[in-house]
Length: 306
Ligand code: MN
Ligand code: MN
Image (tube, rainbow, N blue to C red):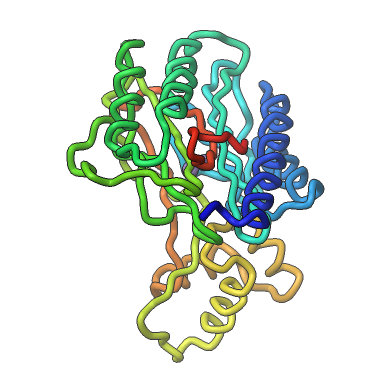
């Protein structure tokens, strides 16, 4: 049975909008520009085009591989020579498009590094058909990046997508991972493929907090903290299980009460209601490039939606 037409159309629309937002955002990344302004512009573009935000626009710079978005009052500014990953997510009724591009500001020192991820992504997508093993796709990505003389990042992966679920069951590794042997991609799956390359060792570790959160489903709620209970219900209702930004919550909170968003999020994280994401930093502070597309798998191969 083919993917339901209605679902397919939603994936297509989300993909089209995410692509537009990514291309729009790419042009805004310049020396001296506030990172906060770019994420606000790109998120505004997604909403204006009629999709919803699947996750906060991530802007991860240099050795930061992923999971950073600015705070509501962030003063971070792009600098000449920065290697910038712009990672954008849009959804239509929960059907997600996830896509990323890397740009280097006013220099071309990392052209080859960026190119290695683009080439790896292209080769991986060309290798996809129903029944292909994810370890085989990982092999293609890893060997392509290696040919350029770089390391692919072994503990960051692509992922299958399901309605309102950004990281569904299947991971697509960025190297030949024997442990995933036998796991296959099948027809009608929606999948994000995202090669990461670095001139470091190819491994990321947790850094400072990245201002990104996600609601969890703890086994039991501790009702002793009525404000926490109220806020977690609010957040679950707003974002379901998709990631959200401190700055989104800050805007919503300040309209309702005098609570401090950062403080409240710390409190909810401490009580196990929400997950707090850390920035992911290359272990040896290597520079990191990433390219990502979302695809849908058909009988005759992969269709890029983004
Ligand atoms: Mn992404
Ligand atoms: Mn992704």
